[in-house]
Amino acid sequence: NVDLLIGGISSGMHTLATSGIFANLLDIEGLSLDEKWWSGFMNENVQYNGKLYITSGDLIPTMYCALHCTFLNNKLLDTYGIDTDYYSLVRDGKWTIDELIAIGKDRDNDLDNDGVLSAKDFLGVACMNDMTAALAAGCGVRFSTIKDGKIVVDLSNEKTVDVVEKLEPLMRQIKYDDRSEIMYNFKEDRSIAMVHLSASGKNWFRDMNSDFMILPLPKWDEAQENYYSYLNTWTTAYASIPVTADMEIVGDVTEMLARYSYQNIRPKYYNLVLKQKAARDEASGEMLDIIFDSAYVDFNMIYNFGGTFNVIKKAYQDNLPIVSSLASAQSAAEAEIEEFEKNW
Image (cartoon, rainbow, N blue to C red; front, side, top):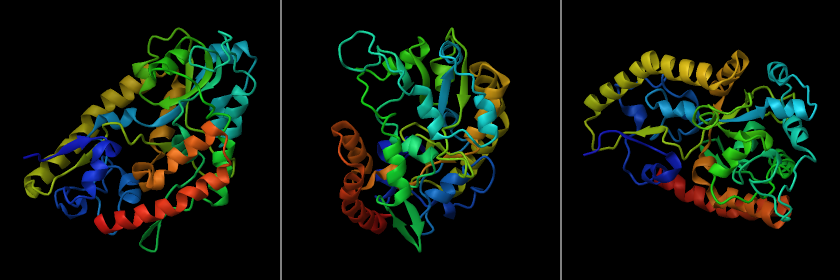
C-alpha cells in the first residue's frame, strides 16, 4: 500500500482527490496543519466543505522551487538605459504590471528576419505562452472563490477582464520547440525580463555571465495591498495520504518529517542554495522572502474548470475578444464545478 503520496496536484492528484482515494487531512490527529511548516494558503484556498485532501509545505522542499517570479537582466537594463530602482519599487508597493510591460515595450527584435517571433530572437519580456494564470494571480485575480459554501467562478467580472486584456502584450505567441529555449533566451542576454519559477535562478541561471535581479510577480496597481506568487500546480510539491493508510502512524511520521524539514532542510536549501548561491545580491534574497510569503493557488488554477485557461490562450492566439471568450467558458465552468462539488 501507498501511505504517503507526493506529486503534482494538476498531474493526477486532483483527479484522485475527487475519487475517494485520499483521506481528509483535517481529520488526521497527528498533523498540525496550522504550524509554520505547513502551507497556510493551501489550507485556506484548497479546503472545501471542511475537507482538505492535498496540501504542501516543508515536507516537500521542491515547494521552494515552484513559485513564479520575475527575473531582470542587469546588463540589458544598462544597455537600454533603464535606471529604475526595481528593488525600491517592490519595497514601496509600486512594482506593477505596467512597469513590467514598459520594460518590454517596442523592444522585441526579429533577429533572424523570418517574420516569426521565437526564442531565438530578442524579446523585451520572455514569457512562455501559458503564464496567464501566474501573471493574473500576481495582479490579484481570483479565478475561483468560495462564497456561502459554494465554489464560484466569475470570469466576466471587470477585474478579471481588465487584467487578461492588459496581459495580452506579454502573452504574444513566441515560437519555441522546447521550453528550455526560453530559458536560454534569457541566459544568453536575449531578453531583458523573464517570468518563470523561483528554481530557475538555481537550475538555469547559476552560471549565467550577466547578473540578474529576482523580483515578485508584479501587482495590478499600487492600491493592491499584497504581492501574490502563483505556486505551480504541476510541480512535485504536494502531499496526500490515501484512505488505506494507518492514519495514526502515517500522521505522526508525516508531521515529524515536515517539522524536521522545516528545521534542518529549509536553512540549507532555501537560505543557502536559493538566497545565497542562486541570488546574485542580498536584495534578491530579500525579494525571495516576499515571494515565499505570498504564495497563492485556487481551485480553478488546479482544475481549469470549463477550460478557462485554454479559452484565454485561444483568445490570444486567434485575436478573439477577451470578454466574449471568457463569457463562453462560464457555463461550462459552472457545470464542472457542480460535478466537482458532488465528488469532493
